[in-house]
Amino acid sequence: MVIVSDRALSIENACVNVLPWVTRGICYYHLQQNIIKTYGGKELMYLVKGAAYAHTLAEYNRCMDSLRAAHPDLAAYMELADPNDVLNIYII
Image (cartoon, rainbow, N blue to C red; front, side, top):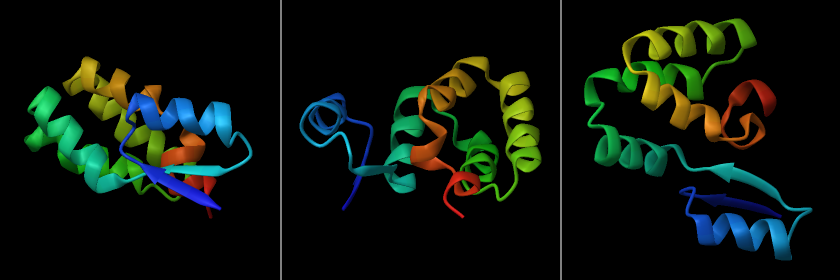
């Protein structure tokens, strides 16, 4: 079983408390919408997408370093996610 969510706290709490063994994921579309709504970071979405779809740890780190330099708050939001939930480097 896999649960893919938009990082809503209620879904996260339910997963942790009711289904702790379930594989979780973050929907990139909803992640993108949350970022645009909260940070207005449309111009930085290429870095967010690069980090989210990175196939190597080096590629992920390169995108996140650029994101940290350009928008530290947005980078911190991205880093709150468990890498196992969002990144290809942990899925492949």
